[in-house]
Length: 573
Image 1 (tube, rainbow, N blue to C red):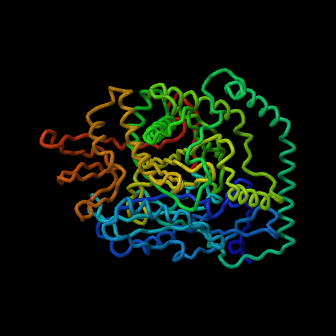
Image 2: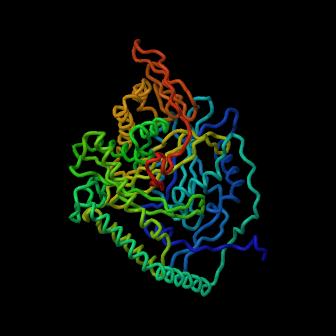
Image 3: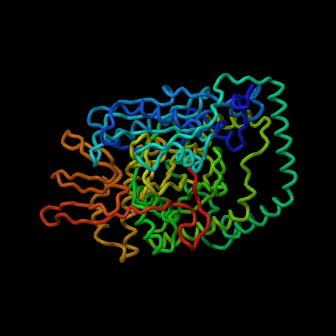
């Protein structure tokens, strides 16, 4: 058999396989995004067939889309990836929205689809195309796209690398790469061969652990002592520390089989300008914005705890230039200072907490494992995950974190998919027992797109929390008066519509795309994302007319170390 036709088999790492073993009907383990696309003028026909053709041309350069799981005998060890040919009519499906559908219906449909488990007999991904939206600001038809990709296959940065294969920097698609086709038939391997390969891998992993154990023990001991000295939980001095028990909130409970999804968008250039003035990175600003929004949301419901809320923050372990489709991340804790009323002091608390997190993680980062022996682990982890949910242990055991906050660096330039421009890209991520809220943000073409996924019972009104993010952004201008120019107040007037791409007014689909807000009087407040010096117009009665403001959508991702003062930050979805 020619080498190009030989099916390949690669066993999942311990971290990748963990997302499979922990998956239950209540805890789907796929990630993705809700994207709003604007088709070019003159593009005819339904978008789904065009997308299938586009993806088919890119499959040779996207192996993560062309593999499925192959289970070990008796589920003794981690499964493996084997080559498979995806059926694009199943993987890319079309949905027709009701007449007059807007962003609210898109979010609701995403929440419904997000609880559906991916078929493990097929490649672990799917794309949902939503037709029926109105025209965009430039006249092109709007299309919604919700993607699902299992976390066992990719982490946040690996998903970004996959997007770079599928997306183009212009409406004209690139010439697809030419590679040898892969075998997509049935993969067959004898039981003895599979067991022999699995046992050899276990022996290799155990040997590696033994070799590294002496140095690992010393490093972990030093890091633990340093972290404990910061925490009053272990008798340390009273300083900002992330080692503490988190207060219990309604979202810190056993999750169910429903989800709620919220979205928000903020101009990256202004967030960077505020961060520079306050000596904070984009990562710091994201944590500050989330903490301020959480404080406002819970105070409004008289649920604000006396202790600070704590965020679980993914930390990338991926080396620069590593585009492998796997998981290379760990988790850290950051106190959000939600118990502090003064915004400036709250930001100081967040800065100190992120410094403490970096100090604690810096010495042990290289030791954190992404792979480990798995013999018998599938049985144990699946049983533990099932028991944890059925016994509702998350309702009773102490919490170390309240939610997950993740910032994934994106691309600073406009991107296109099958000729359609991406206007927004709101991530959709995972909630688990005890952590019923996940806030993931990704930068794209000068904007920070927030996606808030919550347990449907614990936080059905998560969009109100997303709206509070915009209020928190406006409040930050008060800390830096010199940046609080007229555009900030105009932005405040339009903030309720900034993240909306489609809305309905007086029974007619209002033409909005990413910050386009039409008032009831018919006077448009327009902000077109990714376009430099776009005018923002609004009319307040007969007093203010045509006040223009430039929302700089200048490039640059929200990558680690945006400010020179700080080093490596978080960045996984």
